[in-house]
Amino acid sequence: DAGITQSPRHKVTETGTPVTLRCHQTENHRYMYWYRQDPGHGLRLIHYSYGVKDTDKGEVSDGYSVSRSKTEDFLLTLESATSSQTSVYFCAISEEMNTEAFFGQGTRLTVV
Amino acid sequence: QKEVEQDPGPLSVPEGAIVSLNCTYSNSAFQYFMWYRQYSRKGPELLMYTYSSGNKEDGRFTAQVDKSSKYISLFIRDSQPSDSATYLCAMSERAGGSYIPTFGRGTSLIVHP
Image (cartoon, rainbow over all chains, first blue to last red; front, side, top):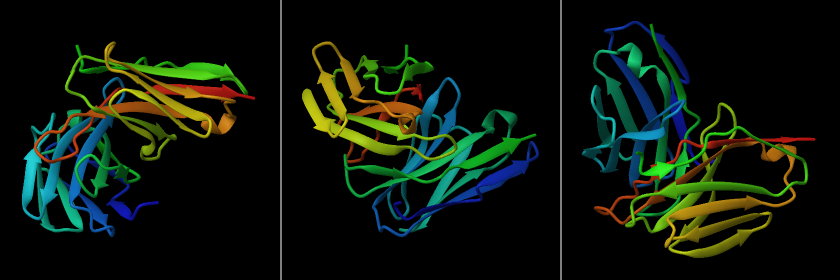
């Protein structure tokens, strides 16, 4: 498995609370991505990063922010969690443009 | 209409059958086509990766791209129970120097002994 660690793996939180998910890689890959996966929608891109402090929005970025202060870490923050953000979140990395993307094991987030 | 359409299934087949999984797409700029396999409660893993049209074979797996019809397929020969998983197609165009694939919803495949 590619060296990608997501933490936590499971989290239950209350509506309105802030939540931060962490993705850590040991591959020194340039690109990092956050996706959410929901039944009926498949994988949807939230945000991605193409370098330290270089990030951009994806398809479903509303309500999410990201930060990348080091090559190896990409953080996803839900400023004020809502029930619609209950999902499985996947981090992915890729070395360069249009090369293979490796996915983490996912974080199952439940907002009650 | 989503850019990438994929029947969610489930598709149930007996062991040894030839499986055909398909996706259609609407964006003619897509040039890179991928198939990912995802086991339950795991992250997706890349199975096949092709550029532009044509066929690519890897063991029991064959990926086919028909850009004129905007249609891609994944064939699995001699299917095994261990092939039971969700298969996601993904595709991307060269955009801004980053690899940003658009995924289909995935097709759930069940291979029964």
